[in-house]
Image (cartoon, rainbow, N blue to C red; front, side, top):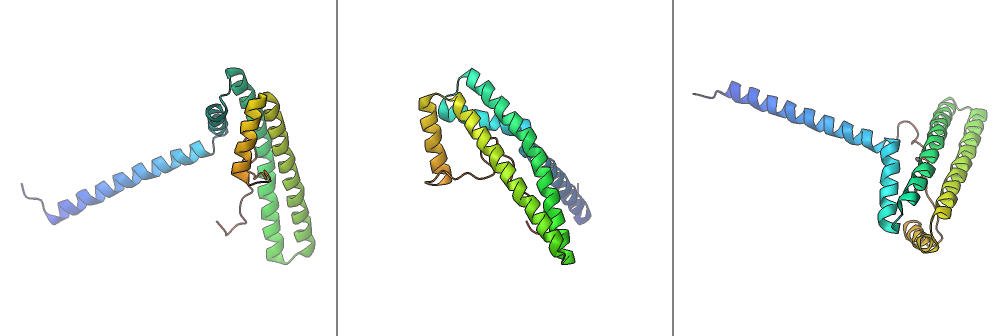
Length: 168
């Protein structure tokens, strides 16, 4: 049986297409897992269980705290996205009043996100034993510098705001 160039090319093209399809499906599954709030909550609880030796009762309480935060965080994230879109539109139109309005909205939403994150932290802290609190505080300091500054993506916190359109 003789393999012609044409057959070899067709086979290679089919192999490349099949591999591409596998890669696309895998990427989509990873993206879906990364944005699945339930999976994100479970990941946080699993991590804290490993690091702090959470009891089953503590795991359930942490799951509830993080699930509630994810729900409120989603609404804030959606509002933040809209505010950034409004800001971009105002900048594109050179609309000073629109820029001020969108910027003030973004500032207010950042304040709400900070408050939500602090409330999650406080609620989780109350669930922990004194030894776990000490470990958690040490972990926080290592992750966020000497002063314990927190970012948007900490346990139970809302996701960071989207970048302005046209940037990644």
